[in-house]
Every structure is written in C-alpha cells, then in structure tokens.
Length: 200
Image (cartoon, rainbow, N blue to C red; front, side, top):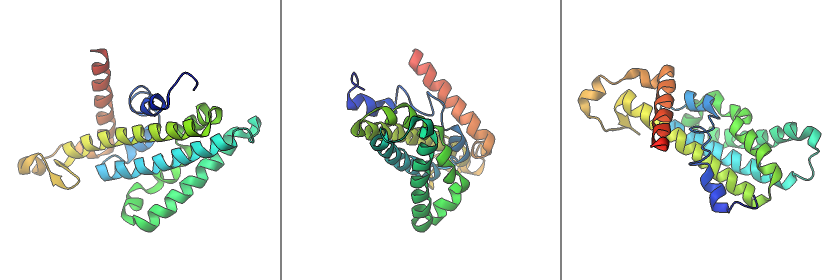
C-alpha cells in the first residue's frame, strides 16, 4: 500500500475494482436478493459491516495468525461478525431479515469478504484495511442498489413503492425482471453498458 493513498484505496471499490461489476465477485447474493432496492440496501449494509469489521480484525491479528491456518482463522472472524449482523437484523428488521433469508448467513462464504481479508487486510496496517473494507463494501452496495433499482423499476414500474413509470406500465410490467432470470438479464445488461462506457 506504500504507493497508494487512502483515497485511492477507498475509491478502488467503486470504480477500478468494483466487486460485482468488474471483479464479478459476490454474484450469488447479487442475483438472489436484488428484486427490490430495499433488499439490495439491506444486503449491502450487512456486507459493509462484515467486510469492514473483518478487515479490521484480520489486520490486527495478521502477525499472530499462523500462515498454515490463516484461511480457517479468517472464516471464523468473518462468521463472528455475520452472526452479529444476523441477530441484529432479526431483532430490529424482521421483515428484511425474512426477505434476505439464507443469504445473510451465506455472507460467511462471500468471496468478496474472504478475498479482501486474504489479499489486503492480512498484508496491510489497520487504517488501510478499514478503508479498503469500507470502499469495497460500499462499492458492492452501490452495485447491488443499481441492479435492484433496474430490476424493480422494470419489474413493477416503481422504486421503494413510488410509481415512477405511470399506471399503464404498472398494470403490465416486465415481470421477468423480478424473477430469477431477470437478475441475469439485468446484471448482464449493466455490465455490458459499463464496459461500453469504459471503452468509449
């Protein structure tokens, strides 16, 4: 990280190395829970918390954890924070918790989080690791919200319950967009559009 400023570390997750749009990591929750913007925000907030806290912990423990067991140790650290998120969400946002279902516990094996622990947090000081966790987490959240907004808007004609495309569209929306195949279509179209913009 010697040649990289903290602002570059933070912004990397949004643009150059966006976990979903560029690195294509964490596609399982991105395809499964992005039928509504609220689901995308909820999953994104959970990932930001887990990623930032696990990066912090891994960076603090990087000189203590033996290299032979570093991956299992990272998973234990990540699982601890996922358990906290799961219990807090179940207690304070039960509807969102029910909507996200099994994908909250599956954050433990989200390759975005494990990849950042292994590739960055285990090799860098605490501040850089926290900034990296925030940047990557917010970049992932941004991607989830973009995909879910695209799907919700075309699938129901509204965003967060506000009808934006008129009553006519709301009566005959593109229902495939809120179904599982719509997730693949939305993500593919968004990535294709972003690649086109990058090459322009």
